[in-house]
Image 1: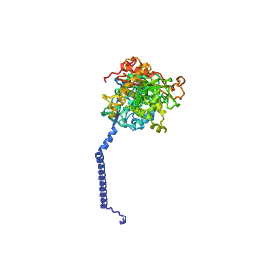
Image 2 (image 1 turned 180 degrees about the horizontal axis):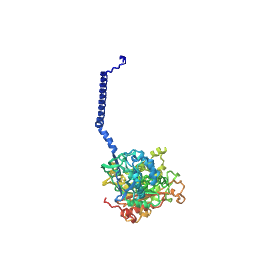
Image 3 (image 1 turned 30 degrees about the horizontal axis):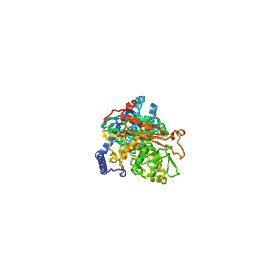
Image 4 (image 1 turned 120 degrees about the horizontal axis):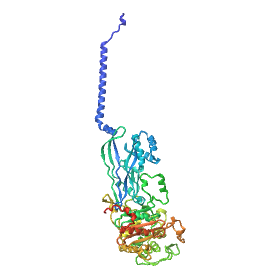
Length: 627
């Protein structure tokens, strides 16, 4: 064999190459181990708390438990707004594999409306804590509960929960005063703390329920529970019980409220009764009304449309928002204004013919009594409700003194302390007319305001409050519905919570006016003489408010008019006249010149002062808590 074909191996070179490869591999392994240990240190030590929290999130869940809502009582301890247990069908979306399939399965088991599914989907799209259940259907019947219970084992994420729901045991008679709660909407969540209301179903919508929402709601509870991989609760780790909302005790007298509601009969109208010594509202009735329980679980579109489109406006709170011409019930206030500014006196006499003219040969502003009243003084003008006396008085005074004086009684502003949406009515002025119509104020405008017509508008709550001021001889409290929160008297801002006084140049005018209003009942020509014969004294004033204006030569003929065009019938009064315990304003829409409002007030006086209601109201006596 030739040397050319011999192959020599370099063992030293191969050994060196192997050693280099081993060293490089070892260095690489050491570097990777160092990186791995560094990463492990970073995860286990540096970011320990972060990953511990994430691990807990996989097995620990926070569940919000809404608090029981505070109850609402009348002055005698009768529950007006209660909480009742119901069973509701709820869904935890995180545990549901396919919502569409679940919908088909549930809809085949019990009746679930499209509206209920729409509400569920809306709440599903809103912010909430993970694994927070969403109510799909409330108030399951026993049959529905049984059907669902049979299939619960295969309905992942579905459960039947016991919940508390609001219940109004006396329905429509209290709807406008107490108000109602309803399902929380997306708009509601914009106004409240979302975390606090997580899991809550209801929120106050109107009345006391709305105004005192923060007080009635309370504080939610929290449960920290351990869950498995499927989200099923395995154990409860921690629990913070919810704090119930505080109870409210109203000035409202349930028997008086229901009695006033029933006495209105089929008429539209309002009744407000006030305790003059406290400003507490004893009754606040608006009719027609509605059943507030319809709104608690969510009213159907059809039922809501019926209420909303009704010509009788059952959803409209006439007691605090209804604007009416005060008509002749304004005359005692006008008389006091004339006395205060020196435009009239108790002794000055005026010849009241059947009409009044600003200028000779001008328009005739007619008196309700076409033949006139003859010579009358101020007291007689109140007793017989002499229109022409107040025409000439208002003409002499002009609108500025009228506006300034009546504003002291709360006309033209909302003074009800604890209800949203109370109207301010309208106390006109020359500035108001200029801004509204770009017109000057005319003497004829003042003449109309002098008998509570024309531009002037007042609400029943304003009229009742103003009546209480006369009853108290100038002292008054702002009207309020709530007396106590829990066992503590309600506290308002010092500006409105304290006693106020209207001081006249001659304080004796208050008593003289009460005497005149007393004679409205006792005098043979008094416009409310039908109330004679009570063992206690009543002071009052009747009124007939025009719904439309008559031409100068036109006469009012009720029989020729539609019912909706009939005059409104009004009455304001208080009793006993010497030391009043109750002041009432009532209005019967389109009641004409009937004495129904006065009759209603007398029946309320009898029942309240003697604590002698018809026996059919015995169920409203309450627990007779000490006050």
